Image (tube, rainbow, N blue to C red):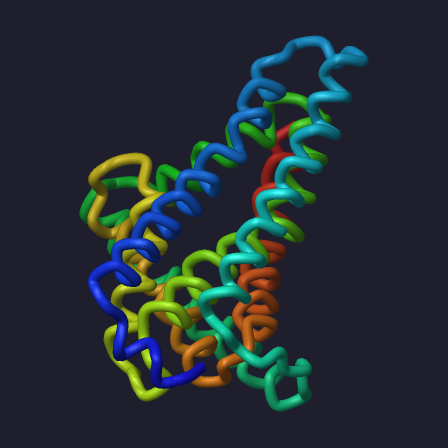
Length: 235
């Protein structure tokens, strides 16, 4: 990162705000085909083609996010090291601990065992096998890349300078949590905000998008395996 981030003019700032809004809209809209597939009772050729299109669109959106990240973030690519792996594992433990604690609070305050976003995912997983396969691929492999490019890569590297420590984490955490909200449950909001904060801290600390992607991948893999295992035990 460079010091130009602290010298943004009004035009530069609003341009980047517009790009961020555009990218967030893409993050939200890329899942629309999956919702259509989930409502399909019989898997036909057209449904399979739609599934292929869903993955293709996802990849295109990732490439768009990567383009803006590299153009405006102006970061130097870094390799993923063993030290980075250690940070990822520590971050995963912190995220898991926060999720468990907030989950217990959610149970006490709202009487629910999981966030509404996870409930939606669980419903999608149980709709049909094609949706299950597509959701596993997108949630574990594609979503971590896209969401990190947008909510960590582009957001932090194009709006904040390299010396910023607190505000990049706070802003990234809040903006990451909002699209994951399905209701006004403040505990669910804090769950995703804490997740976003850990991801933002690691990215801001290492200046390496691969680190936050790896942690996001590990977290989603753990969550999806847990949901699928629970689904299989119920049938």
